[in-house]
Amino acid sequence: MSETVIQAKNLDLTYQTNDGPIHALKGVDLDINKGDFVSFIGPSGCGKTTFLRAIADLEQPTGGKLTVNGVSPEEARKARAYGYVFQAAGLYPWRTIGGNIRLPLEIMGYPKSEMAERVAKVLELVHLDGFEKKFPWQLSGGMQQRASIARALAFDADILLMDEPFGALDEIVRDHLNEQLLELWARTNKTIGFVTHSIPEAVYLSTKIVVMSPRPGRITDVIESTLPRERPLDIRDTPEFLEIAHRVREGLREGHAYDD
Image (tube, rainbow, N blue to C red; front, side, top):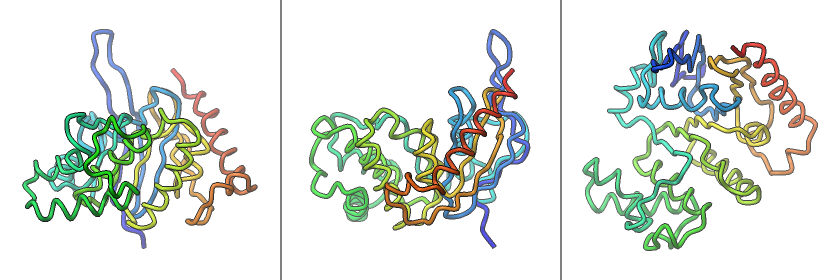
C-alpha cells in the first residue's frame, strides 16, 4: 500500500482584499503518495502555485485540512521536509554557485566538511560538476536553474516542490532539463510537486497530473499516468502520450464551466 505524504481534505484558501475576498482554492481534495511525480496544470490564477505554497507553509489555508508527512505544513517546514524551487533561479550574484548551494546549509548549521560533501553530491546530481567556483552570471539560464535545484536538494529533503522552474527557458533547453529532472527523480525517488502551464511537460514528467479550474481553484481531474517510468523524449509521439494529453486538454476545457 502506498504511503500518503501530502493530503488535502476540502481545502479552502481565501485572500481578503480591499475589493472583497478572492477565493484562490475551494474544496480541494488530493492525496500525494511517496515517490509520486505530481504536476499541477491549469490557467493562470487557478491556484496551482497557491496550493504549492500552502504545502510549503508560505500561505495559510482558511478552511479544510492539509498535512505533510502526517503533520501540519508548519511542523513539516520546521522539520525541513521539503526543498522549494521558485520560477526564477534566485541565486545571489555575489556568491559562487557553491556558495549559493551552501547557503541553506550554513543557515541550518551544518559542519563545513559535511557542507562540502553535500555540495559536491548535488552538483553531480544536476550535472554541474566543476562549476562550484563560477558565479551565476557566468552560467546560462538553464544552468542557473539547475543550480537552484541543487540548492533545494542540498539538505536531502524527501519532498521537492517546484513552481514552474523551466517556464522562462526556450524549448530546447526545457526539453533537456525535463530529461535531466526525470533522471534525477529516478536516482533519488523523491516526491515531487511540479507547477506548469505546459501540457506536454506535465504529461512527460508525471505519474499523476492534477488539472485545475479557473478561480476559485478546484480540481477538475486527477489523471494517473500509464506511461512507463523510463521515458525518452520521443515517447511524446506515441498514442498513449497523446491520449493522456487529450484528457488533460479536455479537463482544462471542462474547468471553464466552473469559472465565476
